[in-house]
Amino acid sequence: MKLSNVFYFKNIVDRYYPDENRPAVDIQSVVAVVKEDIKKLSDEDFIEVITSCFIPDLYSGMGKCEKLFTKLTELMVGEWWRRMGGSYNLPTKKSGTEDVELIYNNISIACDAKVFRLGRSQKAPNVKDFLKLASVKIWIDNLNSNYQKSKISHSTIGGLVTYSSLHEWESDSEVYEECTNHTTPVVMLPYEVLALLLKYKQRVQINEFVKLWNYAENNVRTSRQKNSYWTYVSNFICNLIGISAAEYNSEMKEYHKDILLATAEYRKIVQDTVDAVRRNISANLDKHSTIESLRNYALNEIERRDNATALDYLKHIDDFRYYRDQK
Image (tube, rainbow, N blue to C red; front, side, top):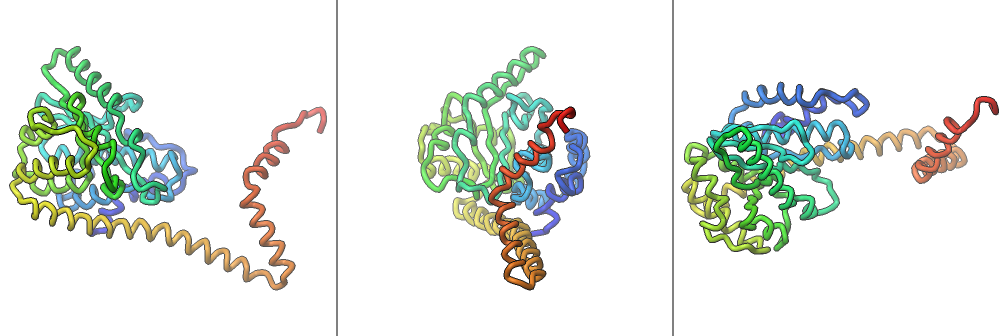
């Protein structure tokens, strides 16, 4: 894999934010630039970008870097759909809307583009954070309502959740039950499946692909069983692109190998940071020639770590809580 593809979005974010102290950028302006640049990638390079998409672990939670990275991930899913032959819309209003509206002729799919950190504390996300059927239904209803107001014959057929399979559930889960719900059909597809569809896009007719959401017609059974869900999805895709189950599994195995190579590169960034801090600590320790000096250094550093919050409080009290006439 090319590192330029593995870190495609990270490199963009890091150019705008060499550190989190930089002023916030206009995200829509950045997206507009990247939207044109990403079109220049070959399908082969884009596949590496889409399968290597993880929030860098050292970005601060919900900070400026993460927000920009997340928005670029949504653009990535829209670009995938464009390459498949559709069009897309990225809502500028984020509250109560889908991440990406995937459009083909007179139908839409409301997409929730998930991106995670590799170092998150759970194997898989909380199901309620991963998928809220009630929210997807609202997105679908709102899209349909907007088209009706515009007097356009258009229907939203369901939802799509895109995500990294490294964060998928190991066994049966409520998430598979949610994703086989006939009332609000939502398909969950990891990024390597999107990559596979793109690889074989010449064989994919979108009007056939969207039949994946026809749960009732396809006799999909609502079930918590992981194997049941993936048997349905993988069989459908095999028939769609004309490959055998063995070929499908072989393709997935190759993508998984590449994803783990990308994971190793992301891990290296964190390890390098740990090693740099360790070297810095060691260098500071070498400055102390006596036990007493070393003891004081250790005491100050441990106190700064363990009393960080309390020391901040003391500083704020001293800095802000006074009367000028009493100084």
